Length: 329
Image (cartoon, rainbow, N blue to C red; front, side, top):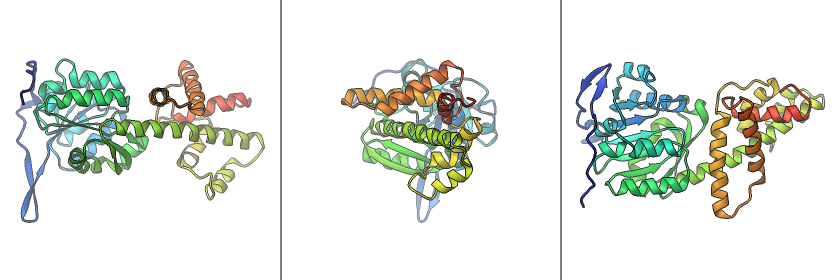
């Protein structure tokens, strides 16, 4: 097979500011055999990505990183990572490239834009995309990478910033079986529950289902908390009582306190869930499915974003329910 020619780009990497050439794949002992340790690249050092990359560098994998906004890599460099000038340089220095960025256009630009991953990757490179993007776009990009001899696993995550920091993320993986088996040891460093759900694009579809279910869970808990408040109940006692029954959920346990206090520090941003929910609603439209609760939640979230609350934690959907009940919001 012949592969398309690539643009000439800067493929240098740096360790604490010093240029170096990428090392060959190293090996560690495993009984009588040697097991290869894959060189990993990480693209996107936001709240989620920086935590995930930290687990990888501490696990002993050679790590090369890049972020669109400079200045996010200092802690990772101090831990032993290298920093590259662009995504192409990361790909050239890596056997596996992991991405965690915000939206479909970002993923496409990093993969196929100027000095993108496609310019530096070799046949046999694996790309693991932990972003949450449209399933159809993922399948299309998987086909473009396959034409270069590059494998793709879409591996969106659930668990928020807490899960990223604790390495307890749930990860939904769309990939061919052999590609999944190659990706799994890397994903096990950053997550707790790793599930192969089908071919490329399937991970994104499962993440869409996840976000639909979360929409209902957050709205349901918000309504319950507001009803308890307006009924004059001890809300903390109510939450404890419900936690032993069928209403128990992660949202009830971990986010009801924020709804009660009307305080929503960063966990998972409203604006990001809205982006994900719109992907899910698009998938629903393609599938001929009506999602009335998700449509309501999306409308509430759009209002929150318009009011300047897009960076609040998702539990801020309670602002709207509180306002409807005449409570401070």
